[in-house]
Image: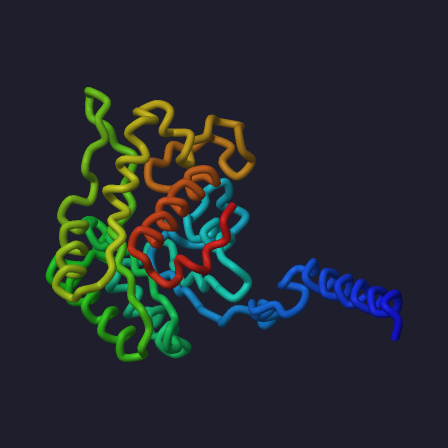
Length: 266
């Protein structure tokens, strides 16, 4: 073999070595496994509560329960099953079989968000009023039965009503019953979303007048569903419901619930 031939072979080998060295390592062998194409694990989130959370019929619009926009913030593996109903207290939610309907289908790993108080606390409405002691007992029952199903109960204080004092400061509208929820959550070691306090903080910057923009406040003739108008300091419109849903989502993240990982960023 001549020196010229040897040199040519050497150059060819060197070029081959350099060619392979120039190929990115990721194209030779990617150590990162491909992302799974499988859908995310299915989770169901049950909402148990009253009209401030409930789905609404078209005839009630623009009144909107916060559970309605809440359903659109999660990935496709999360189902929001809103069982909240207008006018229900913990007592009537049990007596009408609404709680049992959740228990009949609840599975391990599911969540149950429990928010009552608006109707429990009104003594004048004897068909739904629940004494403080019974209210606590019902919340404890909800927690125990959800846990027996290996589900995850979450307690929420009742969302505030729109009520300001003469100096423009938001005032307490659920003082006794919100305190009961907080005490049960502490005693039972259950995650708590203090929606009463959070919603008060939401409304305060709006003030007495602009806070109407979040509630079902309508002038006569403004909406065909309410031809004579509406002055509702309890129920939200679409914007208000979304704001409340965003408060709940923020608290899910703050509590570091596994459900937080399933929230779709928008």
